[in-house]
Length: 161
Image 1 (cartoon, rainbow, N blue to C red):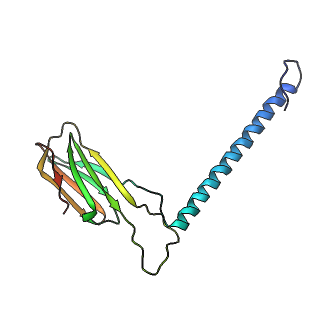
Image 2 (image 1 turned 60 degrees about the horizontal axis):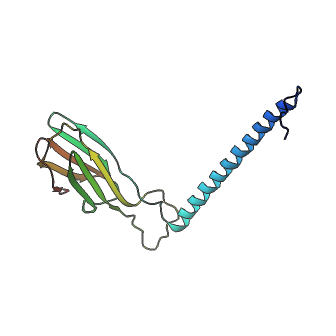
């Protein structure tokens, strides 16, 4: 590699060309390193049958004139595995553990589904006054819907139907 000495001539341009070449080589090596790490992680998951640890359900918060509706996707679980807690201050917590069932006599070769514990919090708008008696939760087709009326006090556990 040449260093620019301040003299006139083409050697200063060589420095920039060398820097560009070294940068390209470094990026190429990093890309290769990350690709190898991804392949190794994928193959370890394939061998162990584990899918990479905890996961987070996805959900939406909707409202109409009288109620809020929190819809959370929790596929592959039962209503008995879901806990819904009214935390106060406009927050509902949904938690549980999703397990992947293995089939008798079959070996899992690959899985892209996540399993394990989850903890999902939903914060309702500040102006909402939520009524404990008007909170209900229903689980059907892998979707939990928590319906909350607008009005009242807080502080209970909500049963899932």
